[in-house]
Amino acid sequence: MRRKIVGLLVLIVALSLLSAQSPYIQSKAASTPLTVAANSPSVTPKTVTINALNATIIEIGNSTITVGSNQFSGKLITIGKWIMLSKDEVGIRCWLEAKNSIEEGEAVMVMATVSRGNKTIDVLMGLKQNDVILVRPILMKHAVVKAKHGTFEFSCKLTDKRGPLLMIEKRGIKALVLVNPESKWYKAGYGDVLWKDVIDEFNVGDTLWLCTHNIAVLRDDFSKIFGFKAIIWGFSGAIIDLTSGVAVAKYPL
Image: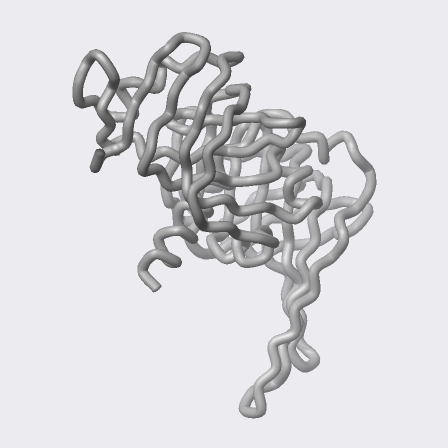
């Protein structure tokens, strides 16, 4: 259970590290709604429908955000905790803090419509504006369609770096690689290092070899928004830059 919780939290952070440009913004097609019915003999049945949309932020309040689009116009509830990350910052923020990172104007959003009996509420689940991402933790429950655990070794192209994280591509499929900036590694020919101290030695455009353990695959509509199809994390082997020769092995060796 602890492993599942840690893995989920890692995935949540990952979704905050998105590329500055999303192919979804140029598309007028709506994503396929995801509807989840939660039924219990002791409570009124609840239905949750998840939608992604291009929208305009009209007003940013202390507990709601007012948006307009062809798919939805009105207020979305925003109270609660958020994972926030731009290219230079990551952290957990309450809405009163997180709202200062966005502004009125165009954005890509994920919203949930929750219905129970004759009551319906609309909730903001995720938002991407320029390089700022805000994500509710529960959104991960709906974004991931497949998760694999094992030992995966492969070569790939390094296409971008986001803080301590790597964006890679293999056979046209992009993935976000999570690495704890405080994690301890052994650098060949040098000695002990922290990941945050060695990441600058891996250059965009280089070919990497990875040995990792966890891969989560996203729904197509979410991957269009976020700019990558998979999230990769968990290391016990090495990361080798086949272009420059830099090689690091994850502790414990």
